[in-house]
Every structure is written in structure tokens, then in C-alpha cells.
Length: 616
Image 1 (cartoon, rainbow, N blue to C red):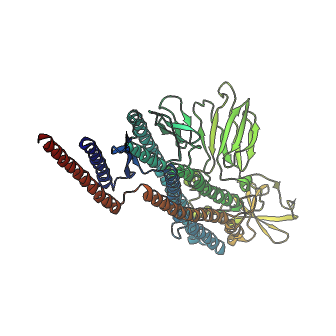
Image 2 (image 1 turned 180 degrees about the vertical axis):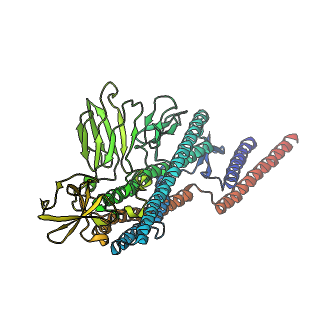
Image 3 (image 1 turned 30 degrees about the horizontal axis):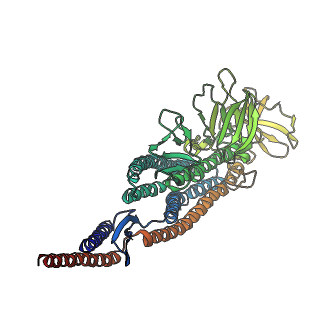
């Protein structure tokens, strides 16, 4: 009897010891990230049959189980992914919004000051000071374009750097999960769950979910497979497949690839969603790229729109106006392995209203060049080799064909991406400002339209009869002709003033401000979006769009923060260590240990009594 009682007491003592060990382990890991509270599970030993019935034989410790729920953990992981996604976007979009809408550093003040200076020139076109101020304000406007573009590029650089770092982090977690899988499979072969290893693996997956949306499946052997994107398995059993970040060609956007370096890699840039990586990639394409493109489109509109009007006027010397701004050239990037020459791309001054803030893909397929607008994926047309086309405000001279061009060769056309950086002021001399109105809107500099002599009639619109010529005191090659209606015409002459070439009209003399007035109206002229938007409308639309995105991401980030806090609280209530509860358990298991020890003491007394009786 004493031997049976001793075994019962010993089993109770061992069970209490295991429970105390588990409680101590919980208390020690109260601040361990990802640790799940553990509990010792006990079970009654099979009873022994006797004539008086079944007699108990004590207790066994069946297992040590962690307090864990897969659904709760998945919710925490999903909320972590969403929260990181919106937090990343909110931080960057807020910077872009503050930059573009800044009342001092934004573009709107620069545009206003430039066109105010143009209006001042119209008020007094004879003022050298007004002409100098206009050129100075133009240079300030150009500097502002460059400043904003550079700041956006700086954000692009930061985003690319964080994408690279994020890829490295994901790879590090994938390696850790693969190694933990190997250890877990080996440990579970002993018949008991390795709780601490399982917690570490879950924590690694949770950390990975901060960078990208992940999905997991548990295999029969206890290993976990981890997938991202559209089923790309970054962890399969004890094998991890790395991601990499690289540019396919210099200047091209940074791409995220799935597969080993130097081997067969798959571009998964457009497949990654959620988390910090997903937020960065979405931010780059939908905010930074679009902001740079739209800023560049405004720069092109300013340059082309102002040039179109400036070349229709006469400068202070009676010469036709030149381009006031240097129009930036569209950017063209060759695809990997392309040997054929790049297409020649330029802006169409007459097609400014059709210009889009989109990039384009030009790809050679079945003997033709196919042009696709990347903002919405719409195919714009197929064109023959060396064909010149005008499309969406661009003039594109298509590349040649085989043998240089191969099937699949492609070019990335970014018309306005670098335009804000490429715009320059071309007119530096105040006298070259064309404030006066030229006679014909169709005149080009030194274009010979008509030879005539006194008494002939010229009829571009109204009949004008020239009655005589007089040498202009400002230059021997300029002559003034008076018409029968009293208007004064400035003409450029050959050596014989009786045979002249008409180049311009100065009917109002040196105070002619008609072209300056037209230049001032460029600010509000609806050049863009098929005649629906002015230059300021386009920039204000950009500010409005970024501002709306900023507000949306702020609201989403705050909402996700609350959901994440709820998910953490739910996990904590189930898996977290409560020190008050553990203290109570510590006391309870201590008392159980002492009670079992007392049973052993009683057993010893009974055994001594039995021995004493036997000696008599």
C-alpha cells in the first residue's frame, strides 16, 4: 500500500514541479516578443483494478501546450501588413503634399510672379527694367521647376533605397523560417510540440508581414510554407528562395525579382502587395512617378505655350521673337538587350492639348512597332518601321526594323519625366523680348513672304496699299512703310528699298504691347487636356490629387492602427503572460508540490510503522 501511495505522491510531486517550471518560464518571458503563454496539461494515470474497485495511480504530465489560436495570429498578421502599407504611404505622400503645396517653395508662387512680370512688360514694353525683371522671373521659375523635380527625385532615391532594404529584410526572415522549419520537423519527431521554436517561427512570419502580404500553410511534418505575391513560395520546407532588387537597364525603375541571383528570375514588382514593400512600390508608381510626370507636363506647357506666342511677336529691334524657353526633350530608355537605335521623340507644339502625363511602351512585334500608354494599358496603335507619327502631343520617328530590331525589343518613353529638370530660359537679352505684335501669325524669322514696291496691294486679310518708304533710324536694314489707312508697317529690305520682304508690323511703334498682352494670357489659356485646363489648372489639379491621397492615407492609417491595436489586444488576452495570473499559479503549484511532499512524508511514516510491526 505504501509503495502505491508513494508512486502517487511522486507523480504529484513531478507534475507540480513541471507546472512550476512552466510558470517560471512564462514569467521569465513576459517581455519576449511573440512569446505565447504555456500551460502544463495533466492527465490521470490509468487506475488499477482491485476487488474493491479501481484504485487511482496518480497523475501524468501529458504535454506543455502554448496558448495559441491560428485565426487570431492570422488576423494580427493581416492587420500588421495593412498598417505598415498605409503608414508607409502616409509618411511619403505627406512630404510630397507639403512640397507641392508649400506657399513659398511650391510652383504656384513662381508661376504667379512670372506672369505678373509679363503683365508689367505689357503695361510698359519700352521699359528696360520690366524686360530685365521678366527674364529674372523666368529664371526663378525655371529654378523652381528644377528644385521641385530634384526634391521628388530625392524621394524616389529614398524609396528605392528602402525597397532594397525591404527585400533584404524579407530574405533574412525567409532564411530564418527555413532553418526553424528544419528544427521543428526534427523536434516534433519526438512526439511533443516544440513551443518555443513555433513561437519564433510565427514571430518571423509576423515580422515578414510588415514588408509584404504573406500566406502560410502548415505541412504534415510540421513545417510551414510561406508564399507572397501570386503564389511565389519564398519558403518551402527548409528551402528559402530569395528576392532581389535591380534595374533591368540604367535609368529604368527598380524591379523586385523572385529567384536566385544570376539564375532564372521572375519580375514580381507588380505582384507584390501590402506591407512596407507594397506601399513603397504603389507610392512610387501612383504618387512620385505621376507627380514628376505632371510637373514635367506643366513645364512643357509653360515652355511650348509661351514659345508659341513669343515667336509671333517682334522684339525691340523689330525682329521676330525666338523661342523664349528651351523645350526639354522626352526621355527614352532602351530595354534589355536592344540593339536598334532609339526612336526620335519630340513634343508637337500644335498638339499640346493632347499631351498626357503618362509613360509609354514601344515594342516590336510581328514586324511593327506597337505603342501602349502605360497609365491605363491602352494600345494606341501599330506603326511601320521608320514611320513618323504624331500621337498625344508627341512626334515619334519609329526605329528601324530587322536585323537590328528583334521580336520583343522595347523602349520606355517618358515624355515629361525629366522635363521639369530640362527646361531652360533661352532668351537672355532684354531687347530680345517680343512684346510687339508681328504682322502675320504665320511668319517665321526672315521668312520671305512677298516682294512688292510702292503702290502695290498686299492682301493677307485686309487690303493694304503701301504709299512710300523711309529708312528706319534704328538700323539700315529696317524700313518703315505707311499705308493708305495710316498704319505704319516695319519691313526688312534688301539694298533696294523699292523691293522689300515683309517681316512684321509695328503699327503702334515702340509702345506696341499686343504680343506682351497675349503672353500674359498664356497663364490662363486652356492649353491642356483637350482645351479644358490651363497651366495653373493642371498644377492645382496635381496639388488637389496629392492632397486627396494624403487625406485618404491618413484616414486609412488611423483606421488600420486601431484595428492593429485590437488584434494585438486579442492576441495578448489569449497568448500574453499575465503576471498576476502567473503569481497565483506559482502559489497554487507550490502548495500542490508541498502537499505531494507531505504525502511522501506520510508514506514514509506508514512504511516505518509497517516495518516496526514486522519486527515484533
